[in-house]
Amino acid sequence: MDGDLTFDPALREIVSPEIRHGEKLLWIGKPTPLRVVIQRHVDDLFSAVFVVFVMAISFSAFSSFGGRSFGTSGFLFWLLPLIFAAVGLYAVGRPLFMFWEATRTVYAVTDYRALILKPKFGGMSAASYPKLERVERTSFADGKGDLVFSSEAYRVSGRWGYRTRYRKIGFFGIPDVRRVEELLLENIPGSTRIGAG
Image (tube, rainbow, N blue to C red; front, side, top):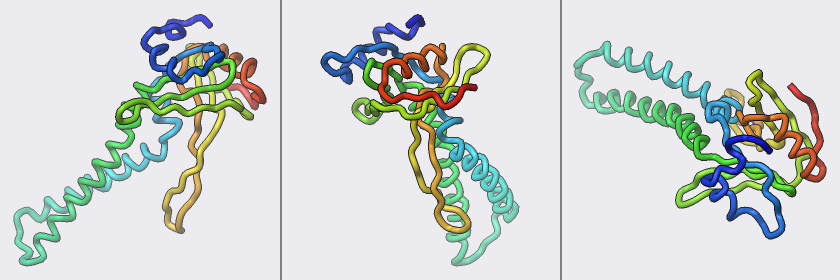
């Protein structure tokens, strides 16, 4: 496949330890980090915006009290803004961490499977997808796009208890997305296209 990233030595060095004997590496690429965050962690982004909004209102309300004394309850009163700040830092920090993780994520296609390699403490973790029952492509005018071929369930707490949501898994913001889709469909057994955009 044509493309600057296909035979990038640094990316090949990352992927090579995962390639099995007799397996042929067909393509290597990297995501557009913002696409990963938007597609896979949109709930985290909404949560971060909401928490920052609540923090701003809370700090405004607390600061309006100035230096007033609240006796023995003063400590607990001033502890609340710190709790809000900690929650806010977590909510904002999570999408930022996901963005950082995406800048170091590597995608690969072999004649047997799709691979997603992500940074972990002390190395890389590899997720392997040897069967892609549903391949969905989203294309953009510049030739980049997304290929979604799996999903994972996760639980979120809501007003009425826990709900199950699904996070998309695939290659996000990759160049020459149509050609990569062809490689998946032609080489991975059971791969089926479910639509194109």
